[in-house]
Each structure stands twice: as structure tokens, then as C-alpha cells.
Length: 152
Image 1 (cartoon, rainbow, N blue to C red):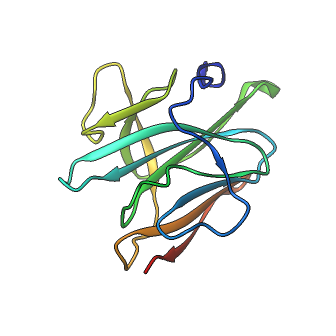
Image 2 (cartoon, rainbow, N blue to C red):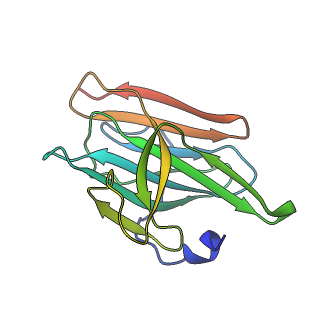
């Protein structure tokens, strides 16, 4: 998979996180020994779906996805590819959205198959009871964990 070499051009700016996420922020943490590449999907105000990726999260680091996103919930997918036995780990199950494997992407109407894109599964985060979810997704070797703090 050419994902690792294709991520050098940054569509998403990785912002290191040293404290608890601020109100309405979506943070991804990586507790694996290899980089994890993250994509998210969320419903826009017109009820269409957008998918975006890739945010590279280094081992033992946490980064905000995009501090301007304000949604009640989101879906996420993590992928990690490394050279030991050409192993690939994937975090994501449930609803399918479009992604582009070889470079960064932003798809509108992402829940509808787009030519040249790949339809893959994403995992749903919990719903916020307020207008904007504040969530931290932590990728581990055994899966992923999501902690949510509703913003007020």
C-alpha cells in the first residue's frame, strides 16, 4: 500500500495536544508503535456526508483533527501499515464512506460511491447531547476507544 509515502503533502495540519481537548474538538491519540493515518466522516448542515483524510498521528502522540469542525457526532477510520511482514492494521467498522488511499482527500456526498475512490468502513463515535462533540479517539493494538465530553 502506498499510503505512507503518499501522505507527505499535508491537507490536514497536525496540532500536538498536551492537554484535554477544548470544547468541540476531535482529538486522535495513537498508543501503538507505528503511525496511524486517520480519516473522518461527518454530516454537514445540509445533511450530506463529507469524508476527509489523512491525518498522520505518530506513535505515542495526540493530534486534533480540525479545530473548526463542530458536529454532534462523527465516524472515524484509522489505518497503519508497516514493513514487518507487510502488516496492516485497520480501525473502522460499520458505515461505509469514500476514501482515497494514495493521497489526502475531501469528498462531498461521501456516503455515495465515487469513481476512483474506495468505499470502506468507519466506526461511529457516540452522539453528543450538546451542539458539538468533544471527543478523544485512542488507537491501541487491541482496537480503539472513544471518550466523549459534551461541550456546553
